[in-house]
Image (cartoon, rainbow, N blue to C red; front, side):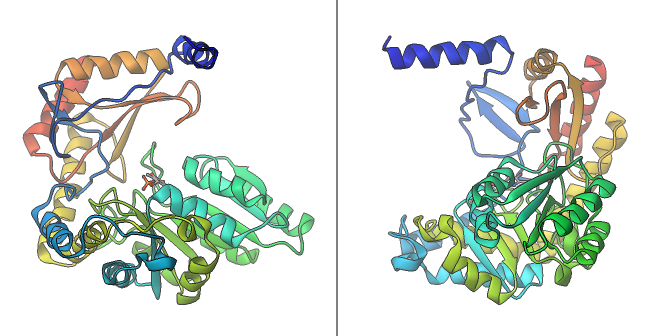
Length: 385
Ligand SMILES: *Cc1c(COP(=O)(O)O)cnc(C)c1O
């Protein structure tokens, strides 16, 4: 073993000792309620494909047609020669769906977050984040060089005191509050109406990541911001195209000026090759599907499945994410192992994705599950208890 590999091996051993070693699991089938791993068929309760669109014929058809016409690659950054009609059309569809003036897409949600925050704030400014914000938002805040303040999850009093502190200590600086609408590992909601009032009272701006809200909340799945009628009071909304929207990438939406500004200042947009046009076509088909009765049916079916699981498993969630907190990292791994034995793919989520000692099973219910599949999981979980 080279000295380099020996060093890495030693580091990996430490991860292993802590019960935090991760490895990849290879799927031999498409995303869906049932997946194949190692020749075994498993019921998949781990995906963020909330509406079952990742393998939906409407999206596959749109992507296939775009693939035939526009090929596999975008060739360059959007600003060089990579912007396709399909990117523009998809962004218009998203802006319409989200009821904002404009939207700009990125190759991933991670890229959107690290592209947005440093474009908006600088070292003389302040970013205030919820403690449970996704790593991409934390990294975006760090990359901006702004002063960072973190408030305990959904703690409005602490948010208020950070806002007061920022106004007092950085009177010239801009203040950006960053939250999610639905927290990815807990499935709970942000008290968005109160957060909007607070940030307005203190003259701050707000960015809301709707990665797990879109497709799940709101009349047609437009997310929590729309459901609460707050669209015009949130400066930046973010969402991903790879979760409920069944494609890949992400978007930031808000005013038309925000879009122009990001095109000029967002480094992960400027210095990165555009996603292939067929990916945009699939995302656009997803948004358009949600505006039809078929799409509405999927959103309703997801809600029915959420209620069914909540009732039968004896737990509650306002969204499709059900955290079953176990605590100890190894015990969580054992529980996930037992479920795997029983034929279920339910991941154990450990540090550093969640805080130390709060390891959990993360069950995600989707529109693609049948009533029987959901009952079967609820029954198995009760028996494991
Ligand atoms: C998944 C996720 C992201 C990152 O999006 P990708 O498209 O997967 O890179 C950002 N924010 C939240 C809250 C997420 O759950």
